[in-house]
Image (cartoon, rainbow, N blue to C red; front, side):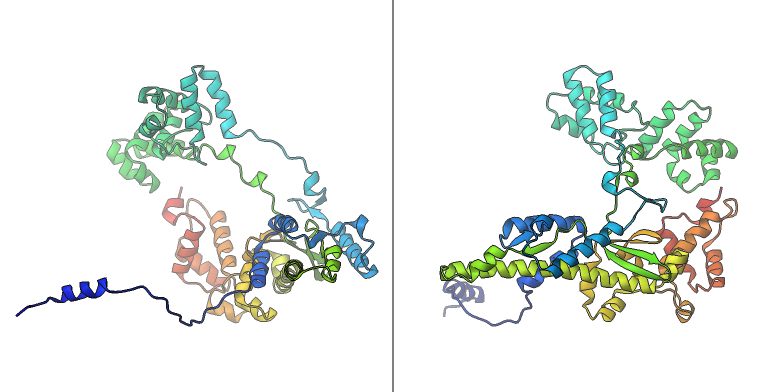
Length: 471
């Protein structure tokens, strides 16, 4: 009797299997190309939209810009509408950070600042003449991160610079670490602080060096008694050395990489206060007006086109019309959203952050009869200029906090955070407020929040707890 195992049967069956094609029906939601284009245009900020328009003009011959000097073919109504729009944009005052009107952003002279790399290269060329060591120095400077730290080891640099040995690399690194700003090219926080302390001329620097070397975690917790016990030093001496360490810069490159002075926000919408109302102005002066090229529109009516050519022309015409419609819908959607913000946040525009009213994407979508995802895409990476200054549009969407506050009209979680920040900024640093004390003050102000909520918001604001804020 012959016994055949199951695995052998399966193997024989597998070897006799043949590939074959089968058809099946499935239901799947797919966005139409026109809808995809509309969503992409909706998500673009003003500057990126201008670039997208230029790219579309290059791809589609049916699209063309409306030039004022070539507007003979435009109707009188179109010309009047263009003139009114240009007049509106010309009447919008530009507000500087101090709130006063002034020249446009393009007319503003920008002050050129020396970069960290330029400063270090200048110091490097003053110290080193040898070509190989100069190459090593250039490599080190090119691998500094945003904070000025060198996140690559000497051993790794030896592999990446074959002509250099580890000794030469360490010598050049030591030279660079003596440059300004102090603490540059360190590989971690401890080394950064030690470099700065080595350049300091204080009596407390010796104790400060020992604290950084041996007790850095305890220093972060302000455990001065434990540090004094471990280093056999007086508590007052430890506190004095801690003040010296606190005056050091843990991010040496921060002054060479200022973000705020070099970043200019281009608001997509502006809310202008006019007596007791607010006017919504779409900042589309940089968006060129588009129209369909009349030459190709006339060519579609001709009889000399074959079927393929006619189909090509129709497709390009359809894409041009859809692109123009998408740009207009984007502007109208932003104006509608800004109009609701202006109506709901009147108190915020008058009184500031504490008067911010809770507002959800769901509420705006319901009022505009649009999908919530559409509203989310419309406000992505967009800014709005208000009487309180420019803000991301997302800033005005926040959840309500506390049941009692909801009954009184609602408090935004952003308002609660700003109130917590204000109280901590104004507290007595010798007797800082605990989370429990902050919770009671908020309750007296009508903001019914739990203590754990206060703790969560304080951590989100990157504010230390009470015992670490105490002097």
